[in-house]
Amino acid sequence: MTKISILGCGWLGFPLAKALLKRDYLVNGSTTSTEKLAVLENAGIEPFLIALSENKTSGNVTGFLEDSKILIIDVPPKLRGSEAESFVSKIRNVIPFIEKSSIENVLFISSTSVYNDDDAFVTEETIPKPDTEGGKQLLETEKLLQSNINFKTTVLRFGGLIGEDRNPIKFLAGRENLDNPDAPINLIHQEDCVGIILKIIENDVWNETFNAVAPSHPSRERYYTQKAVDLDLALPKFNHKNPSIGKTILSTKIETVLNYTFTKPNL
Image (tube, rainbow, N blue to C red; front, side, top):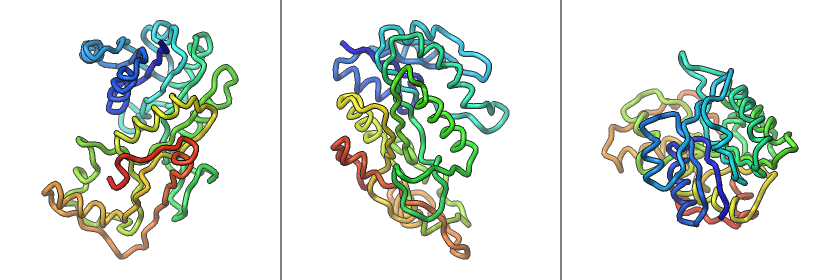
């Protein structure tokens, strides 16, 4: 039985771990919360308490990676507020552990924020030019992992993450003067995030880069207004005075190379 280690068993990593268990993989999962150790264990996941920082990696990382062939890195950068740290340094500190382990393949969960908003259609051939600090650090981390010859790295760039418990409208409801009403949305449902990762693992697709966004791209105003109606929330109000700026992320490579069909194409 193949063992997979998931660094970051959070909003996406936890349901992914449960999906892998159903397919008879062995799963090690990390968390930064002592309270969640029991939750992971009760789900059949081997739990590890691991914390990443700029200066060191705390916890039993060697045990976490032991006998695993695949490492999934699903740790979001914390770049705001008093806890802001260098994400690149955090991952760089983990790499020596990976090099000494049995890990052959790494799946790095990145973001479409590595592309700037230039009102264009974006594919994997588009040269990333991030205009946010998060995007810049993610791109540098991608290069750091993909340039390492000790393991193969596939990068998966997700759009905005949504799920049954998570949608940006909950933060936008009732707000006024929202920018970019005509910009296209680039979102992806949690179910498709898990489904795409399973496809990559099952098809053994490594040393690749994928954009992963649902194929539906209504405007921000149309999508979030309808979501507010659906959830009985106050309607957001958009500012039409300035031209809308945005990008359309295409996931054609996901559909062709992985033969993947989105389960939530219309979000």
